[in-house]
Amino acid sequence: MPKLWVRFDKANDVIMGDAYVELMMLTSPTFDAVFVAHGQKPLLDLIGSSRQEHEVLNEAMPEDMRRPRQPSDSPWTDADTGLAMCRNLRRAMADRPEDFDEWPGMVADVIEVIAPFETVLARAKTRGARLQTFADY
Image 1 (cartoon, one colour):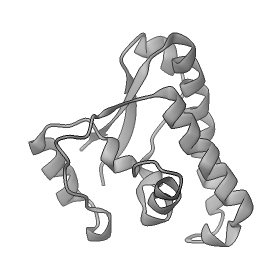
Image 2: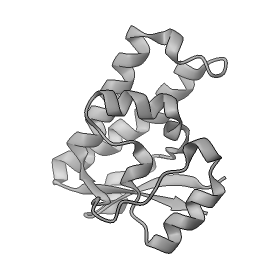
Image 3: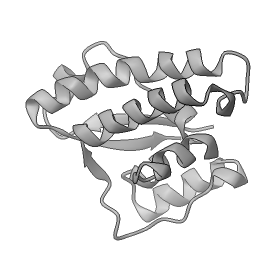
Image 4: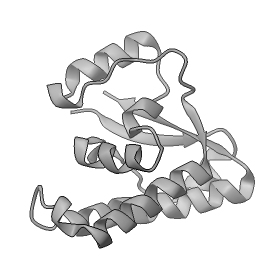
């Protein structure tokens, strides 16, 4: 399965530091529902890729996770959007933990994924950097 990473349009190495941020875990319908409920796009809709890269990624995904490419969608977003996604996930997990039971320890696993993401997003916000998710096949 492909991995989903982030990159920034300014000082990428400084913003990332030594953080490991791999977001593929956050692309299931469970997370899509949280993001959409809060007026956000599913994470896979924020992938910056060519049409060909998108098709390769889509083919590698389980069928229920495949998404059509929307050429009008901008693949770049601001750090505040990413931070809001993390806040919304944390709130949803606290308010409805029963929705996050796809595997034992799911909430702890999600927190382990979003904690370093929040750190790099805070650095990006300070620098006025935008982020893009991209897939590594």
